[in-house]
Image 1: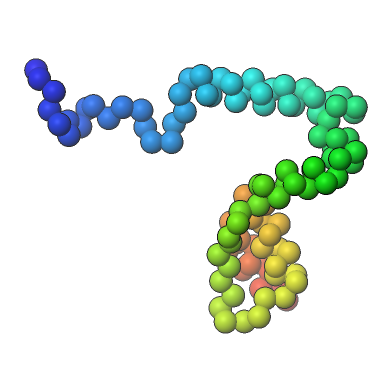
Image 2: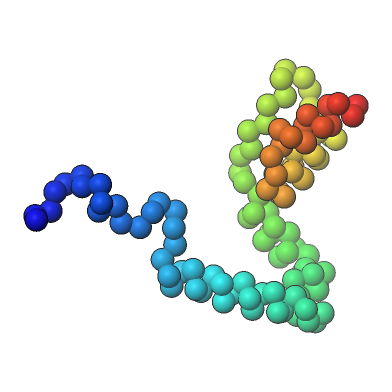
Length: 105
């Protein structure tokens, strides 16, 4: 049977999936990182204390350049801003925490 353009069975690798080599390298690096954290002289915390400028440069790269925050027309206070940033950095859903914070005020 000749190739038919748009054939549903010829999908290829699913979107967002990693090839085996990339997945394996990431797993090996993650395992090495975890083992290094057990060594007090070689862990990230110790390095950060000795090199705070470089540590914060690295951390800054993990923060997105733009964050969409909806305040419903109200001014955002420091508590809300800190909670939003904390939730974002921890990968949580800010909507759930905001509803909890609003009811506890």
